[in-house]
Image (cartoon, rainbow, N blue to C red):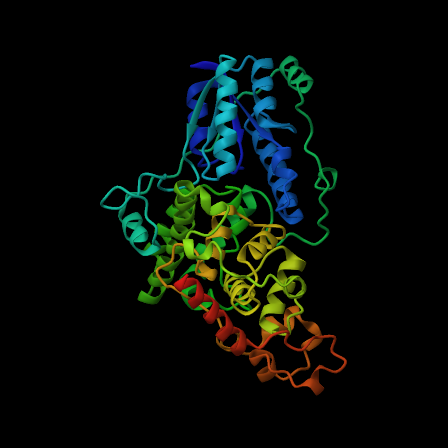
Length: 476
């Protein structure tokens, strides 16, 4: 056993059920955490202020958790390839441990950091933590990665799942002299979002920190999970877990989450309840499917999976795209969803599908514009899940259905039949008759004085036009 182990947190901002952190405690008599505010990430053009504020809130809670475990979480603000070897060298740490990631940038960054550490004589240990089954563990009969969800789920669901791991305890941290040495190489205090150049004044849609996430999970599996199937698609209803940001930053250990679903299965009082638990488990598998796909097909981060979409003739009308961004398309269900995103940093999943289909199939705007806009605003913005969702909606991804077009009116009529969601996010339309709101056919005289536009496109006409373009790409 070595004296000091540094554990590098990234998207695993918790001390419980953390594979790498639990392993670090087995490797060393002292364990100290670190987090690196990477300028190569913070300066990208797809960073959401709400997401940064949520992350910093989680880091604040993580620092408190380390203090309770008698250790520290050090904060660095520099490129990891420089900052982490410098810190490890200054502290005479013999090993640095972290959990692996599937994203292309993370994989490249980790190789660079690993090489720099090993050149300095410092050992590296890495583990899989975010997934119940690591990439390579779930393969087809021919030992290839899955490119379709349903067979992936069938295989994934049959495999034994690991049990949750214990929390970090009695970690023993740095001495006063070592803390001073850490400060000399850049370890400092946790900055504010504003200090990093990000402003988010609205309340966060999900409370930061491991304790809050655990409480929310407990509440969900005690009640709402048993009605998840029937309630999850209605945006006016609080029928989802509300844990997407926690999953993004690894605030909950996935083994803990899975164990909670198994316990919920044991409390099911009907077949409907059991089906609902299973449906939520399938959502966990969807998240893992997209992470596996991103790991094996990193080119997805840059473009479509299906070759025919490489040169699709998008119209890319900037004015229409801006209207979509601002929630000014004249389609109430679309505009309500965009207003929810802009005002809260979050959007209901059913609505994500509706607005994505509308942008690509009605406005004929490149899905990557929408993908980036989501990442610039979502508190739970995650490359794998966001990219997977957009490619699913566009029909450019790993989806056996060749073409999928959502009708905004039929979607609203089915999932917001009383227009509760529409009225919540478009209060200027509160007095408009429900049948007009859910069909999107508001009479011109009703629009007078409401500060709301007429539809910027005709859905049926655009649907025909899109299908024509689609057929053209099929034959070229």
